[in-house]
Image (cartoon, rainbow over all chains, first blue to last red; front, side):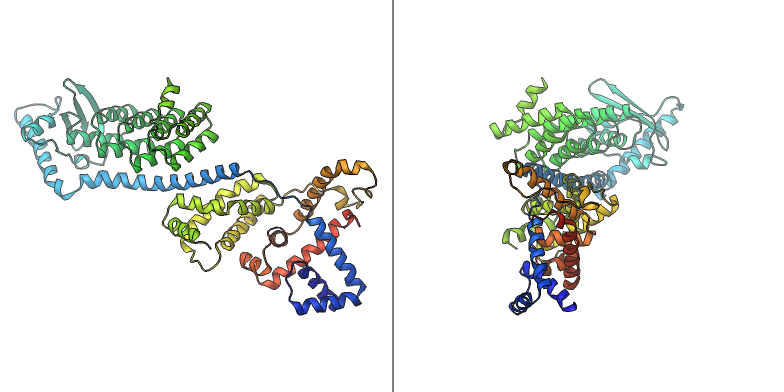
Length: 334
Length: 190
């Protein structure tokens, strides 16, 4: 019986073409002599016939492509998320802490201290805060870049009693409690004002203040402001702030970081208005395959029917008129 | 492994998700087919699709072109599917009553025209019976049967995919076939 068990295994392996010629000859000789193993061979042939009746599941190539696109988008979003968060902070604080600007920080702090000292020497009381007109100072010195080391003005990294006022001539007044009471006056073009507003956008818990800071900064689009806007689109907890930030981003020329921000917003933002803006931003970019894939995912999977429709139309627009600038989305929105 | 595959692997190893997408496109229909067979449902296979390829993407750094890419992909697929099945607990199998307790032929000898009309239905029914029988196998035996019989992998390749020795693979295959013969014999025409 041991011998037959060995041959019965060979019967199976032979059926799969997995035995050598010598084993096959030995098997065939044994089958001529052994009715039990001969019956087992018939049984094995039958079971193969049965197994071959199993039908393979049909896989729709479009279904597969959709899953593939989702997986690639997931990888791109993960990559963009890691890159964006680390990049923002490096960029913002790298600028603020660059050795070349240390002298300017010192000069600014000295000026703030001088202004306060002058006010106090004049017999003033704390009821009127010292004023530093950053814009005027910048004008007098014939330079428009006068940064403020906001952190050094704060005791524990927190801004307190923040107040933001719009003044005539596009000026803005920001006052807050730090190591002492500060009041800065200038236009959004002034670097000092920009940095305080940026600090508010990044750290302030009051949504209204973040929104107003964002509105002020959006008047002066430069690369630092662009990074702040991207940061807000991807991280701000308030939908209104994210929406305003992403609309501001439309003023910037296409770039890889902008594209990744739009992709991530379209794929992950919980607010459909933000996703629509992200789609509009993408539709204005070159109609590359990545953008088309992302729009295809949105067209197939977005939970909001209107977003789906817009994505579908944007795709059709691409197909019908490559190099378009998102006119279909504009038309649909109207 | 083709030149194109090598290029795509090298780009993906540098974090290029788009190149990885192209690489996946070359293999994902086979991977999906295997996952459907191992899990017994398209829905479950769709659930593990992303998990499989994200694992592949993360592990790609360690791929040194020493084994075939398809073998490596199959290994990750089999392991992911076996873990998935384990985490879900044993799947409930809706098995034909005759296989479980009261074996009797599904049909008599085909001696009338009705057989012709019903042949498609019958084929579908037989396919389901075979699938149900395969589902009753222990996970490792089932994986070996699927890889050998339906994916046409050699025993040597299966051993590499499942990280077993060839003798163990042959043992699993033989025991699985004995079980399938016992389960399916009542349905055989002869």
